[in-house]
Image (cartoon, helix red, strand yellow):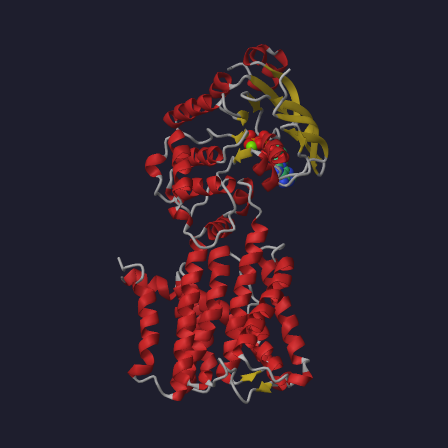
Length: 249
Length: 307
Ligand SMILES: Nc1ncnc2c1ncn2[C@@H]1O[C@H](COP(=O)(O)OP(=O)(O)OP(=O)(O)O)[C@@H](O)[C@H]1O
Ligand SMILES: [Mg+2]
């Protein structure tokens, strides 16, 4: 059996009386896209927060690359190779597109306690950053301020930043949200291309994209995983159809 | 578009020429010295506020520590610049490191409040130092000796020494903010969560920046003690911290020379208004409010919009 890259066991989290994550167990294998779908407010973003380290679970454990990371802070998990994109884009608006990606490269290439040389002149950082931008089709926007990008372009930059970290696992929270049809097509193509190299935990509302990309799908309803399986299994699952997919799917 | 060095060159050029163009008299030089020393402190604060997003309301404490280092060493008979200045800088840096270690764990208004509290702590400590004059302050009968000489008493030498230090600090600050280190600082100001998600903990970066700004404040404080030949707890009062913060904002946060411009404008305005009327504070106060409300980007913003 392949060792999973990410394994959640019995993850539980409540905000007061509201149980947002209830005994969630799931895994992501290397090179696998595991999608998490579910209605609004099901607890998908909260789950991503717990995996990335912005929220601590009340119970359960998170193992990443064979290591228990349940109690590690966000920055430590990122250094281990866990990269996340944010549902609400969190690019640095006052930085250029290139500098946004270059900072991600900087995070994994040597010490940042360097005080003299202008970081913007470090070719190694810039080249790797440009490569990540090219992967998402943003290379021609490198000099633009991230704050001046269109919504869809910010989604692309969000992804480029995650790629520039050269992570082992990508945690993507609705990478397609708000993207137009053309941008969606491009992003789906990019994600399909990334699959071989990374494990991906993908939270997404766009069902066409999810069913095209995912190897496995987990359905989250009221914080609980009601089903996990291949796209075909999920499509055929009566409970899922009733609870979530509805008749129009 | 103005050349990117046009404004700093104009500021530093004006300071270099001022003594030759009718500002060479004792009073004018004292005024300019005060402005440049405050500018030096404001530069450090500008790295914190404009660069790292750390709005400190206790920056005068580092001034006070630098100034009191001069006083204490003077009382102990030590006036050698080779000892006095390093001690002043180091003491202020250590204070910033210790207080910053606590303050930087907080953010926003809490950070402002806690730096204010540490500043007040330094203020009350200074006021209780009866051996050094307590509330009344301490008069220095001679300036610190440079290589055993009284060079610092020479107003012209002092003027150009201050200018050289100011230019050096400005250039170093610029490099710092453009470096890898500065990039992490700037990014953490814009979005600390994003920076952590990349794998950085902002804390050590911010703490080091806070310490460096404190060290620069200590140097400025030691220079101020020499300029005024008198040190009192009022050097550390929170109003002084507020003044420094205002200089930084008045000049413009985006670029470091804004702090120098702000300090110059502040000191000259204060002086000019005080000559005009004894009730100058009644004018100065509302003027500050107007600037804060309407002068977006500070004086630099004004200059650049024209350019
Ligand atoms: N910090 C918080 N405190 C209290 N309740 C919260 C908090 N964060 C989220 N919630 C609630 O938890 C539930 C799950 O939110 P979450 O954002 O995880 O849902 P989601 O599945 O990502 O939804 P969407 O599809 O809209 O992005 C919601 O009811 C939300 O209001
Ligand atoms: Mg969500």
